[in-house]
Length: 144
Image 1 (cartoon, rainbow, N blue to C red):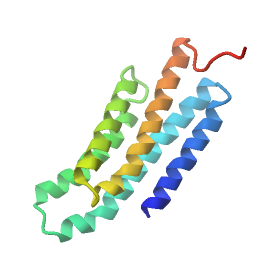
Image 2: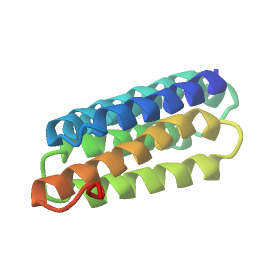
Image 3: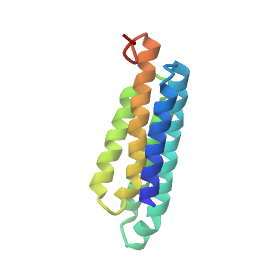
């Protein structure tokens, strides 16, 4: 299952590369939005898959709730601030914290969160490219 999610992340990265080759601001905005939603779906799926493992091991209820809720909040926060000025740093911060949480939880539950974190990293890069294009900065080198 994890291999399937990683292959999906790679396919999404290729899709983003194709969409942004046109250099249009709208294309990168749509791709970044799609990637933020995809990251949320992957994190929700990872939380759903890891829930039986967390509930069955006799973990304290607070630990179980934190492990399931914090990644979902981290993946949903970039969606809430997508059209604000702080969208780029918040998306990067959420991606970094989500990767850190996945590494902290190790090979158990953390492996289910890693694909969502990788997609959120790609979305953070797309959001940064979108902000540069809106500010009038170069998004790629001009042809010689």
